[in-house]
Length: 81
Image (cartoon, rainbow, N blue to C red; front, side):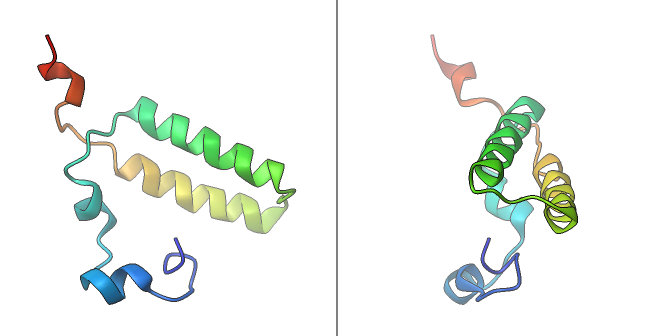
């Protein structure tokens, strides 16, 4: 998130790229998972007292990225008996 927000590119320094889809490609992410994560994100911002047009814009970008990560990787639970 630091690099995403314009700060130091810690992930890039260590791994050489910041392809968010590639980073998460092995993780099963359903739309429901993204929505739960986004709700948690919103609660954290609210709890810290962050609001206003700049936060709305940030949330819009984060929502777009979170939903872009939804994939068709089989859920880890599908293999359970």
